[in-house]
Length: 262
Ligand SMILES: [Zn+2]
Image 1 (cartoon, helix red, strand yellow):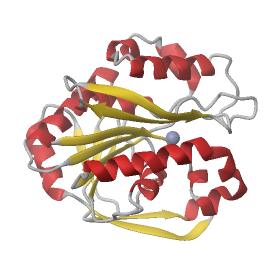
Image 2 (image 1 turned 60 degrees about the vertical axis):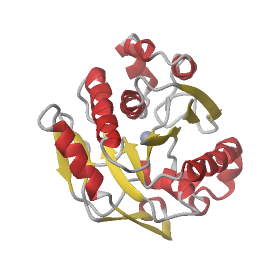
Image 3 (image 1 turned 45 degrees about the horizontal axis):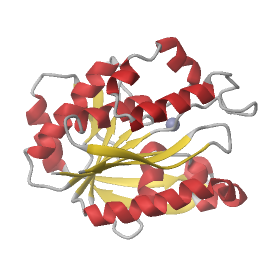
Image 4 (image 1 turned 135 degrees about the horizontal axis):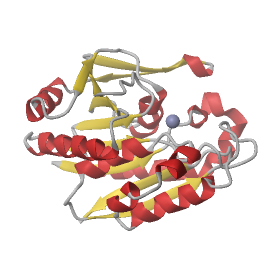
């Protein structure tokens, strides 16, 4: 069964050795992640699926990392000591393959190193328990509906297994929220983040599908496709979306939110 679902941002500056003094600017996000970690531990999943924008992306297919074990390191960001290790859930991946048959293009890849879209959320969410199995998934650039469909497939696979599963949609919102933002400033960026949080709270998937593609493009987000897969996975389930934090101290929107099941 699906026991937990959440949206988590993934800036490497959240890692204390990388963020250093900047970490003070992420207080809201960190307190929200503390709460989320507790909630996750209460939900007690056997397996955590993490959907990331920053792994090996195939434009035409969703990719699932089937390596037997994974390592999270942050060397690319100047931290040469932090190292976390996780085991894969090959049983679940086989279930997902069987559920999919040939309905959607899914490519299996095998990589030991996790990208920061997976590593940063796991750093916070597995501090008390590193035994949970991990399934790293990358979104594609197929259309939004295909992402919802892929989420529904994941849900089918979850409900045909006897495991307790958590799903984490890793992603940041606009990267253009301030003049010093990494992707440059857009006057529409704030409106995008506000609108996206609004439709998530309203549980209006249609509200996302109806967004103007140019408006989305202009925002320079990386999380939307992760969120759509998650929304497909919880389709028809009763839930409320609770925003635990939202802040953008470096011009990038960081949202921590939990989908609370009734
Ligand atoms: Zn990102």
